[in-house]
Every structure is written in structure tokens, then in C-alpha cells.
Amino acid sequence: MNQIDLKNRIAIITGGSGGIGFATVERFIASGATVVIWDLDQKTIDEAVAKAPGATGIRVDVTDEDSVKAGVAEVIRRHGKIDILVNGAGVTNPRTLVVDYSLALWRKMFDVNMTGTFLCSREVVPHMQKANYGRIVNLGSVSGKEGNPFSSGYSASKAAVHSFTKSLGKELAATNIRVNAVAPAIIATKNLFHDMPEEMKKLWVSRVPMGRAGLPEEVAAMITWLASEDVSFSTGATFDISGGRATY
Ligand SMILES: NC(=O)c1ccc[n+]([C@@H]2O[C@H](COP(=O)([O-])OP(=O)(O)OC[C@H]3O[C@@H](n4cnc5c(N)ncnc54)[C@H](O)[C@@H]3O)[C@@H](O)[C@H]2O)c1
Image (cartoon, rainbow, N blue to C red; front, side):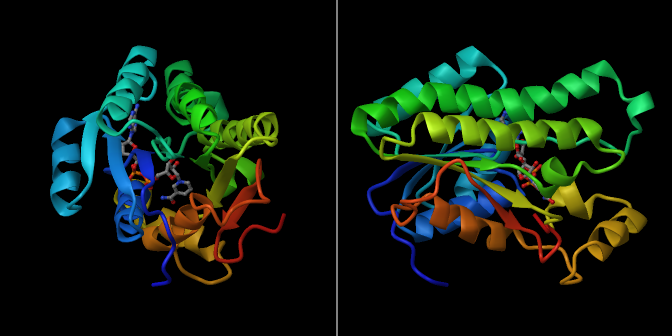
């Protein structure tokens, strides 16, 4: 593993108990960062913290404005600053045609994937501006670029994340705050891959020229680099991590 320097950096990772989020927690800690996991369920947060010595956790629902505000206030109380925000909290939809897609499911995709990313960014950025330093990394998706069939709400919400990344990146471009996104193709996490029916797994993997799903650790490596000071001339960008699937 190459060493990326995140020493003395305070990082929030939303969805930090999940597959990619937790791999990022581990890589951040190995890189010297102080990590605060934000996630929905106290039990899974406690389990994640127990497996990642040095990390702490706070129960935050990223769709709830008050919860996000309270989470930010608590991180500032504990650590005095926020250098890094990884917007990793996300949900996906079961395979659903647009004509069968309920409004409730559609709203859930946008609430968590997009509004959560917006709320966390909006509340954290003023603290980064005060310090004139910050790195924000958003979890987009190849589906947000291509528009996957049977996954319209998820795909559209991730396209919105890519667009939001550009808007915020440009707004902050003249500062020392960088805002970028990653666009993974299929990554072998429990909820988004291992729990899928076998024929779906085969279908998604068949679209990847490397012929396999990516690993959470591989995405974590890219996120860690994007969260570091080394990323100085990229902002508002979406970085593919797709085993060769993404072509633009
Ligand atoms: N695994 C993949 O193939 C893949 C591909 C492209 C993009 N992504 C994106 O990467 C991110 C992580 O995916 P993953 O596979 O690790 O998923 P995961 O389900 O393992 O982790 C997601 C985490 O987000 C948390 N979360 C959900 N709603 C929340 C809320 N309202 N507030 C706070 N936390 C909440 C969950 O509890 C969970 O711990 C997601 O944004 C996902 O859309 C994943």
C-alpha cells in the first residue's frame, strides 16, 4: 500500500459503516487522519468503531437538516475543525422499471444520495472556508453517467451528485477547498453486490472489461488520494473507477 499523508486531518465519512465507507475509514486511519464515522444505526456504528481503532462515530441521518447540523457541531466541539468530508452515505433501488417506480422510492433515492450530499456539504463548507482548507469527495456512480435501465431513480440521483460536484467545485475554485467525485462501476460490497441475485451480478460484471467487480479498498485508495493535499489542480471533477467500463 502506498502512503498518502492525511496526518493531522479531521475527516467525516458519511455512510462510514458501509462497504466503501468503512474501507475508506481504514485507509484514512492508516494515512494518519482522525476519522468520525457518520451513519444511521448506532449498532453498526459501534461495530465499525470497534473494528477501526482510532475512529469514533456519531449517529447522523444525512437527510435530516437538524441531525446534520448537530453532527457538525459535535465534530467541531471534539476536534475544532473539519478538513475532509466524504459523502459516502447512499442507497440503491431494487430492479424497477420507470413505469413501476413509486414516488416514495424516487424521493428516497434523491433524499439520501443527493440531498444528503448537499446538506452535509452546506454545513461543513463554512468551517473549511474559515480555515481556507478542505477536501470534499462525493460518491457518484457510473450509473449517473450512463443511466442504467431498471435503476432510473438511483442513476438520476447520482447524475445530480456529479452535477452538484461541478457547481460546488467551481464556487470554491479560488479557495484552497477542492470538491471532487468518484464514479465507481460495480464494487463488491454487501448491500450493493453480494446481496444481488446471481444473474444480476453476472450481468453487471459482464459489462466490466476487467471481468470482475472492484474492491471497496480500490475505491478507498482513490478517495484517500482525492482527500489529500496532493490534489491541488482538480476540482469539480468526476474520477472513474470502473475496471475499464466508463468510456467518457
Ligand atoms: N457498491 C457499488 O457497486 C457502488 C457503485 C457505485 C457507487 N456506489 C456508491 O458508493 C456509496 C457506498 O456504497 P456501498 O456499496 O459501500 O453501500 P453500503 O450500503 O454498504 O453503505 C452505505 C452506507 O450509507 C448509510 N446510509 C444510508 N442512508 C443513510 C442516511 N440517511 N444517513 C446516514 N447514513 C446512511 C448506510 O447505513 C450504509 O452504512 C454509495 O453512495 C453508493 O451509491 C457504490
